[in-house]
Image (tube, rainbow, N blue to C red; front, side, top):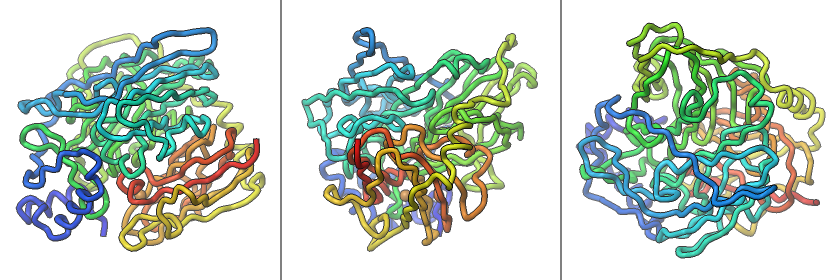
Length: 501
Ligand SMILES: [Cu+2]
């Protein structure tokens, strides 16, 4: 049975809060057991409040992090992971969060392709952390391997070569069995790579002005504004309040022109089907690993945990005063629910354009390199449950076990089978410098907006998804896992080891 957010809310209403359900109690105690070391306040007697009325708050934009120093080759940054407080729910006290520099979402790091970034991460939290830069291709020791902990009071340096194409990445915690709570509490932020190709295109430009990051996260809150980590049905935390850049169902004032958006779903497990209340299209331009070969025009798109989609909305056709709601169709395809709203409030010239062809480098990789004839082998992974624990090929995480040993530079096809049908799993593979290409899903072509390089593949109920990529450039052990963070923690994660130099 698929339990979506709305079903859970209905169940909750019927059972007087949902937490009286025996299954709910069981899950709560499991979560409590696992997170005993996670220092998450367990408010077992508190039910989540109803979501706040939408569109009360302006969309915030995460600040750009300033480097502590630059030299000929490298930008240096320092981030301190610590407890902070943020006013999130109107009319309620500020919410305690865990954040990079104590803010949620974390500050955005701006990087340039082929220019190194070194980030010193200081841990002033009461838990072990391990910081991963999702989408970055870097050496094992800088990848946030799940047991490479930064202990409380300690610090670690991470080197990022930024060999990747221009893309929207995100920094988040990856500590073994604690990723879900840590990310839920706020340890997530953007890291954006720019390059010359992207800058040469006439797309809408200007971070926070016409180039807008949107991190989507669904959470529960208690009556004092506190975050509630309510695990439902061994799935994770669906949440009932959608935060965009940390604000509940916000509104954004826009001019009647084109805007570029970089959407990242960093929810614990929620997936969304996004559409506009006007029925007007999104011009899709980017996927997880960078700009798509060609733009694609769609009326809606699905986004699972950790996926990124970049798109342009053209507000020029709307009269001043028009309000356009970004809506979610996931819970009920016939009954859209709000995510945020765009208010067209002013007239502006628009020099931007969205070319049909965007990224010849991605086109070459997808059409010439990532083709089955170049694959040296195929591996199969079945994702599902084993004895109540999420598993890959029936197995949970084992730091000592390696489930694949590709040679450095090998092109491989990985097949993910989700036969049980009960849930979906956005499968993420670390390291791959250009991500992968989705070959097919149940033998059919991927959706139009998936026709770009990706690092996370949505594997839906009863789906069989084939991806092809190049396992390079760094040798060593790297993880692959479901990015529904609760699934990842318990225990749908494994590792491969790239062999050779
Ligand atoms: Cu999963």
